Length: 529
Image (cartoon, rainbow, N blue to C red; front, side):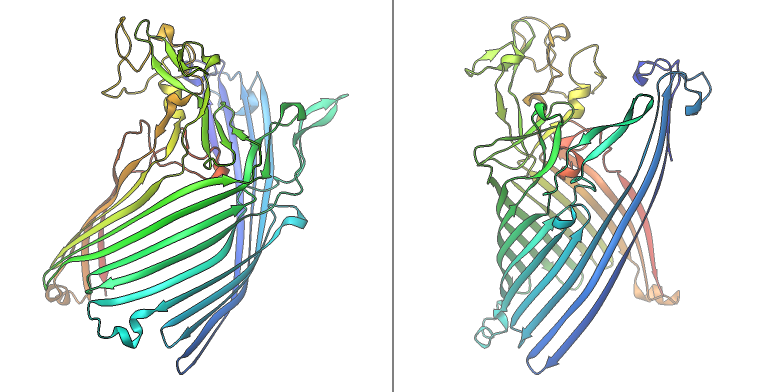
């Protein structure tokens, strides 16, 4: 249950001078079943195992919401609304079925082969487009088990591996392929419907071919390296694209174009110190990715949200590229806004500013780092993650740091390097409020670098000596103190630079009013009997 209430005497932050009340009830339920048949056969140097099965799941939800304005002071139920009143509700359901099979073959613990095949069927698409097939193959050669490697003492693991497979994406929500209507009007005194969503019976799975190759190398029982290269080609991209206004519908989910990702993933684990009392280990991962779009012909597809923030798709571009009027800065002469015109020169006219592609929320590289130091029963472990090269549209800052005095909440804590223009000659990054025309409008001003380094966790633990624990009739006793989401190092100015790039959640890379991850301190006692 969700309730909202603003009194008629609340300040202007409520936006409802006559009072507002809203009440919503949700009911959700679902189920899943998984049935698997496993088999295994071993004879000599040959080993075969695998599985076959069926999986099905469904989700159902229903909600009803009533709201109204014109609320008498002290009353908090929608039925007392004297102003505009609305009621809404809808049931939503989705079903997914999968047939699964996999076979693994090992020869002499040196050669490994695996194949899988699954058939998925989703209610997200029309009946003739719901089924998709996803095969995969993989092979590996454990070179370190070969006879000729036994004399190479410094190498304790050497493996080559390769794989190919298909995966699919269907998570756009239910009913997107159907024609939909809203019963929000009347005709001749009777309920009437208006078109709400245009049908797309050809909407289907977005499918990705994944090709990977790599090598694993272990040296001196101290260093482990995992190096992989990949090429992923996604076809029939699911894009919530803008439609021409003449058609009567603003947006529609469509399968358009292809996306190619090429990259490298590297993982290094090391044991830096290893003695009877002291051990120090580190783990480091990094992945580089380059994205390129194709299959759009001469078209440039735009996807905009309700606030006019735009992402575009076209041949040679990157997935989810921002497209906005180019911001230049603040005019030192009078403190007004400057934009870049079509000729590349500054202009005060927002409408004359040119539109440019301005990066993508897809990171150029990302990864993590972990280290652990152990001395006898005492251990200290820290985990970090990082992202770099991505651009985020900071709508939160656009809303609270737009410089206009009569729009929204201009209440953001300023950064130490920010300066408001005050007199001619000032080199500033915020205009004089009286000259802040169009500062609130979409532009590259609010597209920021989303790079960050996060301290995910730090944990200090102590395992009590066995001589003491045995007296308590226990097999083990560990006490630990940890901190999660401890700190984020970033130049991004907002709650959290870690935003979703799932198109189902709106524009990917769009930072709105997201509450950041909670910082938590955890004290733990682990008792083993």
